[in-house]
Length: 604
Image (tube, rainbow, N blue to C red; front, side, top):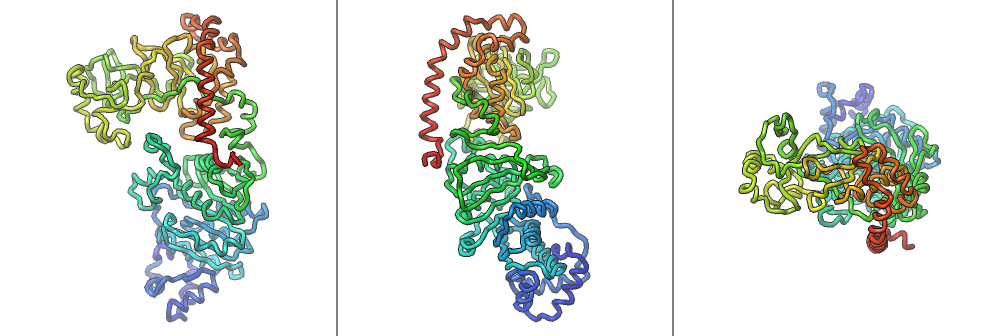
């Protein structure tokens, strides 16, 4: 409370000192404050009231800032919350009830009070007590300076949103237009766990991921996404809107999941804004806006900007049961959206780069600590990383990697006898392996790695970086008569025959493939290209449209001793060999789509 008072204007403090001299009890003060600012039970008890009177004394009012709370807390500047509310008002929406599930310093509540003239009730939840009091006094100050402003009844709760019972609002929500408004934390559950935060939802695999997916990334979720899903569950059956500032990745995930939620939601829009300018945050973010209380069963999200909300720049969402990033571009590329006959693999994951990744300088191995090492060559392979995949052909690595296993889970005790130098080196650095935080290493052999298997040792690979916005595929050749490896930011197809690798490279690096990828991948994601995305490339459909000559055209930039392996005979033999594989892959994928991934709403 003290810090909240320190942010009030001197004129407001003078008003409060003079005004509250007349009251003897906190009940009297509360009754009067409801009339002034609409806040119900401004003081929760006698202690709050006496503290308030004490803190009003001039000796307590000094300049001091409220400390920033845990990472993920981006307090909304009033210019942005005012803009959001004004956009809703211009659309003709005049809510009677506003709900702010994480109101922070109250920017959105204040903007709503200033913008919407027919508000009857405002409900806000905030876990941090300093923000709770800050918002109360900010609202009081607003009405002291604007006594004729419409005064709805305001209920503010200092509680954990994940434990709050939103059924408290149901009786009033059934009758009036509801606006769920705000800016939930921009942080994931795993990041909060690292910070030992208590401000987390109950631990659950709320998207029902299975096995390895749940522990290697897909089980991680954004707190803002979780809160919006809570709001859907509580308010989707009532008339109104949701308007919340979130990362673009959250909006993508919500749009992807909405068909299976069976909530009455429609008119989804993402209004882009400059998060760097407003929050000094290097992240792509938007205002996510949707209508509550009705469903069009059209699972499309429009993209506009806060500066030009009526101008639709593009759309993403579900088209013909396929999730796409650009609806218009996809209409021109959807013939090539199918099922890849080969399995895309991710590169090696080890989380111990300073120990396992080496450079070769003057014929010597140098690790990440700049130590010169003498090691057995058998387990050292060339390594290609995302930043290396810039050209169609890679024959020399920048780094090498020690492979401690040839398959996941393989016992590594053999190192002591067969490769004593490597074993001594790894043992001397065993502390770095024990510090790896990912749960995938728990219970695994000493010096374990992941993303390794028989497929890793194919001599020829076609690879793409998962991190870069522009899709580019490279042919990876063996190095020192051994297959080169890729790190876990890359995806690849492995081949025993260089002719087959060249044919696939010629197909993948054509405009048909790249247009398809641009229409189904979200380039503002941390990892635009994933296995799920790449498995949708129908190589055979693209090859039919290309033909041999166009497929080979790209390979003219390769050295003659490489491109010579791409012949018409090899082309025809390749499709004769894998045509049946393609059809079987299609049938399997079609069955899986119908039986497991098809959303309930698509069956209506």
